[in-house]
Amino acid sequence: MSSTRRCRTLLSVTLNFFALLFSITAFITTYWCVGTQRVPKPKCSKLRTHQCIDYGVNETDPNKVVYSWETGDDRFLFRQFHTGIWSSCEENIHDESERCRSFIDLAPASEKGMLWLSVISEMLYIILLVVGFSLMCLELVHSSNVIDGLKLNAFAAVFTVLSGLLGMVAHVMYTQVFQVTVSHGPPDWRPYNWDYGWSFCIAWASFTCCMGASVTTLNSYTKTVIEFRHKRKTFEQSIREEDAREAFGYLREHSVHSLSKSVEVYSSQSLQGGRKTPIPADSLDLSDMTASLGEEQC
Image 1: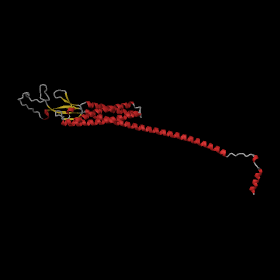
Image 2: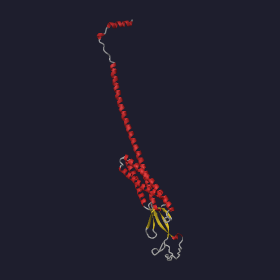
Image 3: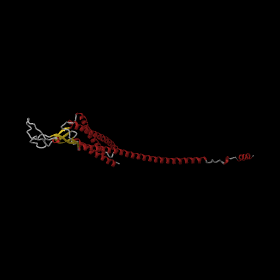
């Protein structure tokens, strides 16, 4: 029983560990959503001769009217961007670096409250995962004590389930905020096309591992309780059977003893009641006896 329960606890600890690792990684990275942004091409200069618009004249002369024959998407650059919970980073069209901005500042004012709730939920999700992981590790230490192990198992299951629910709510709220920001965010940031990134995938993988750990923990708790109750019921039944045998033997011995004692008492009373008292010979009167016999004959 203890070895099986220990294996289930090890499985729960492993799943919880991966859930915690994935959630922290997703929380600190900026690849929840990735895509491209369409920005106008800059003017060509001595330092920049490609991916730019060449007007062919001195653009510093204010009296000259310049024209560009590029139309449609040829007038734009498509730069890559990636966004996380905290910040959004996009390529800098002037050099090889990246420019990052706070995603909280990019979100519309109507969605800032939901975004903060998402951030707080993600933090609580990680905290509860840490608490559940700690309780599961303590359960491994107290695996020899069934009662203490059951208490730790129950608390670990509760904290893990709560963390999973908070994580799911946080992921859904962030997704909704991002979709609204795509439509109503700053014009210089709005994506041309986008998709979910690897941080978003491991965030949901963390939720999956968390739910797996909670289900495994609850299953371990239920099985341990059922096995413990069955063992206790079997033990109580064996004690009752043993007590019944002892009581039956005690009653049988006392019944035989009482019966034998009753027989001895009855035998002694019978012997005393059937004993004849001797009559002395000199007390008998033969003449009286003859007279009485004659009267009976008459």
